[in-house]
Figure 1: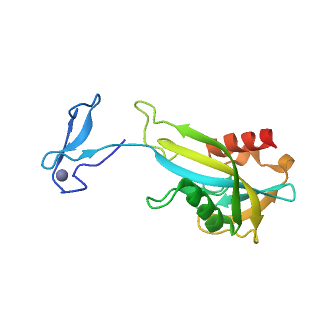
Figure 2: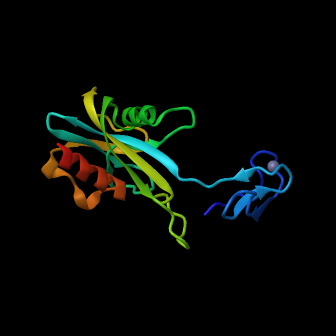
Figure 3: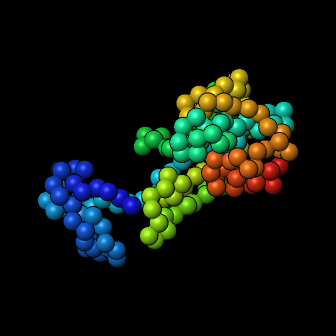
Length: 174
Ligand SMILES: [Zn+2]
């Protein structure tokens, strides 16, 4: 799951061991005792709504190239999840949004023995976008963008499990 071999702090080899006061094996630096914790990545995005239609982006890169998602991406280390949701929405769709209610935090743990997947080991947070300004333009990971009425959502061409889950929650709360 995590291929780190050398300490990210001092570059000495890592060893697999259960650190003091811990309960499971971790990769620990043989020189400086730095512990490499492997935690989920966090992604954040929004479901923008205007005139009864939802903005979605068509992914131009892997993972899930060629499929539709609401705008979403990884949270940077120096921003809040809310900042990330607004930033990713603007980067991928051109829209400037104000966050409405949090729809949910969708959690996809890595299952034992499962090979690496970008859709695992991730927590995806999604907000309804309350106000939504600007023109819808595909950017960043997207090669197309479009507005969908609820009955036009391409349910068979959605990019991720979280795409579907948040859309269902969004529609249920309207
Ligand atoms: Zn070290």
